[in-house]
Length: 391
Image 1 (cartoon, rainbow, N blue to C red):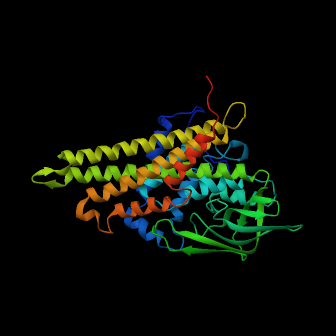
Image 2 (cartoon, rainbow, N blue to C red):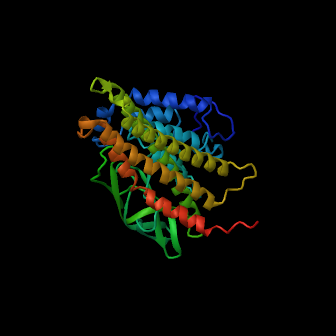
Image 3 (tube, rainbow, N blue to C red):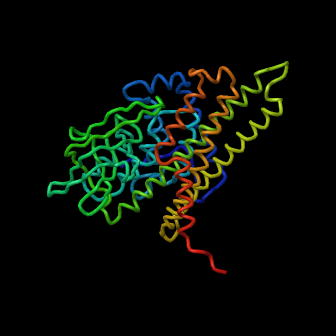
């Protein structure tokens, strides 16, 4: 496996506020993404067969080690944790990039690191190098309508499922029903497993469907362990998606401030009017609430994964932190995107304006790993299931 050297240093502590190395990481990634093109370039690239820039993806994997950044050192990664990878994902959200950092680096690669089948080793090496793309379904029993059959020669999958993205993915991570219960599988895209691009409201994140007909699959977690592993993968996905939403709202707020300071009405910048000031202040609060929730969830996740005695935190605690981030960041994304379009006035309502591409992305994000409403329902369920404190 690749053991790339990252161009920054970080200590092993957990930080709720960004330290100098994380600030440097943000600045470096922002510069790389900024030089890769503007929104028009992104719209053009997203419409190609690949749906992203292979050159930019190569730079992110080779120069910035995004595929190994959050992978434990024990299996060939850099061991910096989800909090640092979330910084990259946040910048990708700001730039609305379609490269598979969220689906492959944040969720797909940790999934293929599970399991003990020898056939996984070449997949892991290729995924860590960035040459193999891994995507996932929503990892939900309700949406993964797949059935697995075991034989002496291995597992095969039949059925259909909807993917997060990447109709050009090489491996799909999905749950499937076995005779003993739900299990987690890696499904290489072969003749038996076909991907088909689906129409999407967001052209910058092309979604796809998976159709399996006796498709060979590799077991990652059997029915005795799959529930916990799937829950942890969904937690990673929710936190990563929250970080992307933070980047989106941060850029939309910045864009809206710039416009309202330059746009004049009755001889004054419209940002000087109290009604506009109040709306900008509300946007700012949404941005900061989202940033705080996402950073806490990522930091809490890393603290649980790197506990000194090796113990993993209570899964319910991790789910709670992730669901709070999902609800807060999802709500903030919708509100800020809506306000950005309205405060840009007539030009903001044209489809050509960048705000609409961001708005489409946040609408799509709601459908991936749970809407804000679903996250709030999960928070309520977790809160009511906890034993009452006794004085």
